[in-house]
Image (cartoon, rainbow, N blue to C red):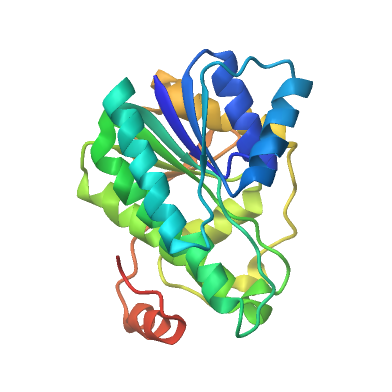
Length: 259
């Protein structure tokens, strides 16, 4: 099976890469730049993971031209290896909120992630699995960094819409923190005012989270539950999508346009 993994040099992303390579899958790993590439290779060397099935693609999610180049590379791999069996999005970055970083939060956590996925989608097998790592919540982020929070909510909302349409792919969300799972499953419905109910998240080690993601990508018992939120092998039901005026107001305010 061919697996596409974004954010492959990050804590959870690189561990997912290692576990997939250990299972002898072909891994198309997207990293930000040469520094990320070197970091991933160094991590795999320390873990004694063989890299003959690893194919690295540089894709800075802040750079639209880099996204285009990455998609061209992915199409070339598709021609060489055939259809992809899984897409795992571990990419994401937290930029402190100010006028300069608003667009960076939007690009990395929403726009570029969707551009990559929409480019990969036609290259995937029927019933292939698509997994999006749910970003963590920092205390008061919804007050101090609205672009970061809303970008993530809009990304999840768009993927939920795809899951609701029932196309030929299976969509999943995963978080290593129960409080994050609760928050996003509620707020992807458009109820944006319950941030005060969010508890401090309990963090799992990256290796544990990576193993959970690999299970979702591979195990038969996770078939046919498209759109679910996962935590510790548990599933939460698919939430409703945005269906109120607040969605359009936020989209206009934060320039979160549909692709």
